[in-house]
Length: 66
Image 1 (cartoon, rainbow, N blue to C red):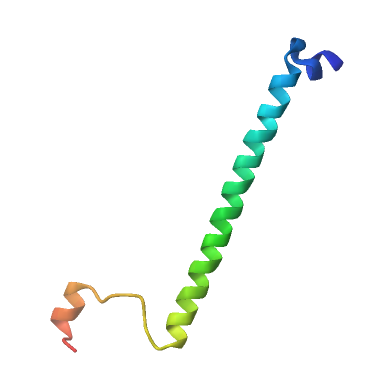
Image 2: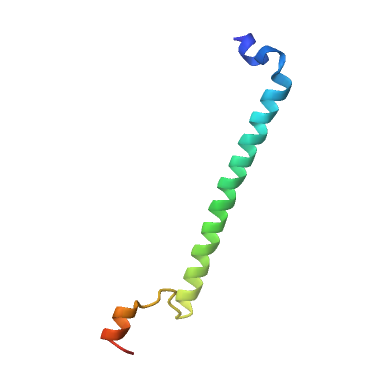
């Protein structure tokens, strides 16, 4: 098992690269989660202000012009 962790003498390069890769992936997940939460909050704010973010389709406009 210690041979695995030693990585044939390259552990000093391999394990930090795994740590950096994991950190980048964790950062991307956190960034996406935070961005989604901000987007949801913005949609709720617009709905509370009486603005709907959805647009009516062209067919619906032709059938029921406002």
